[in-house]
Every structure is written in structure tokens, then in C-alpha cells.
Length: 163
Image (tube, rainbow, N blue to C red; front, side, top):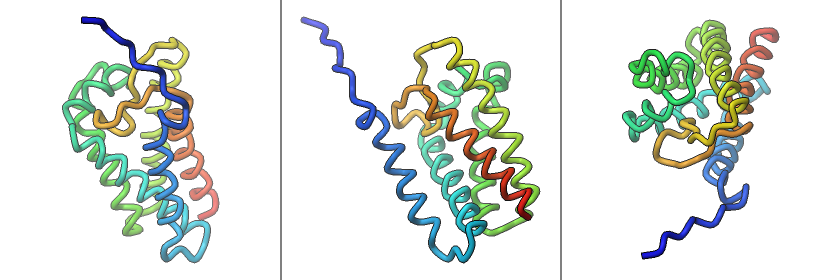
């Protein structure tokens, strides 16, 4: 029996699920948005809800994958089980405009801290799976992961300054 290596997929094929989700989120975020602030809150709500959904499909797999690079999940495995619920709570909070400024601060802390583990993993050049879409979709850790985390931080900062 011969072992065949999978041919490497193109960038587009690799990140297609993520690009599809982002395209949907961008379009859906226009629903009911009268200002760019509304649009950004809708986008963040959709982002956190969608990403928590994929993590919750296989929370054990997510927790294991997340512990490979997240600074807190490495030391405290339970955090990998809590994190998807934090994202879900943020998403629902943004969706229903519940204490938005508080949620923006929480987003900055959560995503800023999360990006530290991503930066470390990228600097070590390890080939690890990104847990951003849970264990269901196999995406490699890359600068895309960092852009997601820091994108949420930047959007949160912009909205805090503008509010």
C-alpha cells in the first residue's frame, strides 16, 4: 500500500470557507444598518456568533487545537471550553446592543490577548491548525488568523473612540 501525500491546496481553496463566511458577514451586516457604526456592530455580532458556532460543533476538538497556541488555554485547558461561550455572549450582546462600550472593551482584551498566542505561533513557524473555525474546518495557522483577531481589536477601538 502506497502512502500518497495530499497535493497542497491553493490559497483560495485553503481559505475558501473563511472567505465565504466573511463575504456573508459583510453583506448581512448591511441589514438594518443606517450608519457605519451599526454596520460594524452587526459585523462583530455576526463574526462572534458564526465563529462560536463552529467551535461549539466540536468543543473538545476546539479546546485541544486552541491549547496548542493560546497562551491561557495552554496553561488552563478549561479556558478552551469557556472561550466559545465568551464569543457567543459577545456576539449576542452586539446583536442586541447590550452595554456596547463594555463589550467593545472585552473584545479588545479578549482578541488582543488571543492575538499574542497567534503571534508567538507564527514567529515559531510551527505548522498548527487554526482553531478559529473550530475543529470542523481544517485551516492552517497563518497571518489570516492574526488579521481576524487584530481586525476585531481595531474595529472595537474605532467604535469606542467614535462613541
